[in-house]
Structure formats: C-alpha cells, structure tokens
Image 1 (cartoon, rainbow, N blue to C red):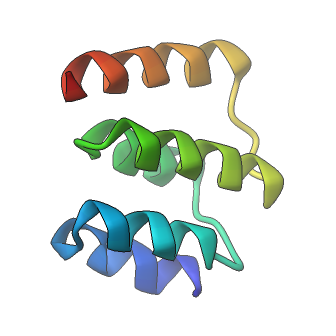
Image 2: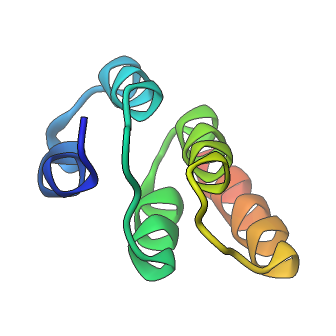
Length: 78
C-alpha cells in the first residue's frame, strides 16, 4: 500500500486493520504525517509498528522525538 492511500483512510480503520495496513506499506510520508498518525492512534501497538515501519522505509525521525512520542501515545492509550 502507498502512503497517500494509507494516510487518507487510516482514521476509519479498526486497530487490527490499521496494523495490517501498516505492515503492507511500501512507501512512507513526511515525518510530520508519521508523527501525526502515531500520536493519534488509540492503539499503542499500531503507533509502535508505524514508527518501526517508517524507519525501515527510510524516514528520518530524531531518536528523542520517537521516544517522546511513543511514551505520549502509550500514556494516551492506557
């Protein structure tokens, strides 16, 4: 799946569908879009998988920003 399709539709998916779609990503968006989606996810697993996938696809996210955002997402989802 390409990032544009993912980004346009992700808010309407269940957690399991979101995780599945993250796994199928072949391209990734800007760091701002990645952080927006990750921090908006109610499911920590989905947010974490998105960050990991983004880095694997070449996204450059500052280490501190990744850690801070993941903590915020974890706290929000609990």
